[in-house]
Length: 193
Length: 83
Image (cartoon, rainbow over all chains, first blue to last red; front, side):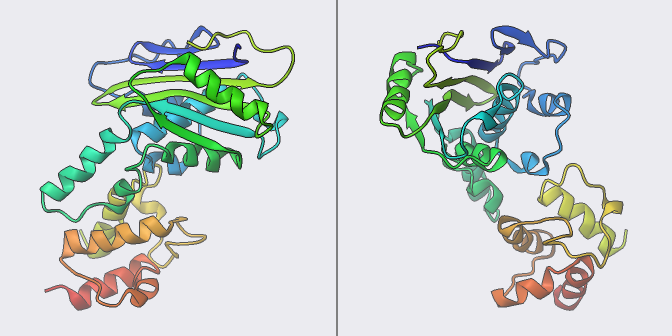
């Protein structure tokens, strides 16, 4: 099964539907490019700045995806989110742990992101999605496994479209592979990999 | 720098209000609701702000609504309670 749209955001750059995107953004080692992408997208969503890096990555991926596909063609409770990663929310957990180690009062705004599935909540709030959602932790991205999980949702009639894939970040290494597939007969053009 | 100007800078830093400048925050404008649009997590961050910068702890949580109404009310509370 192929996806109708795909977005990759990795340390190597951005591709949307297999084409390089925002190639003028320079990806520098040890520096996250998320705020540059946000600025380039010309968004006005103050809550973005309060998100942890995992949520920023997912949020930006969906904003790019929406340039290729209109989510409103599906009912607000008919898009399911299914994501996977290996580092869970460890990137943010460490920030939270450090504040405790430093004997500072831990930040509630950091604490609320110490779960990986929060990114799906942020995406749902931004896009007014009320569908099913699932976040699983696995060693590495298995397109086959992700497609199986997605197909179960579609086959059971729990959703008309699935948005998700692989979203991982740890110590400035990030990897988003975001796909949208649906139950339409014509299918998509982009391989889930 | 006076207390209110200092508070505005701390609010922006503590709450990650990246797109807001200190001059955008009116002294008497509500911080929640129509004002800066802060939410319940921000309210908890304001408690952390008072503790971190002014070593003030809020004994009665029900006072929060009054204390955190605006920059003016926060400044009044700090003036009355800091050592």
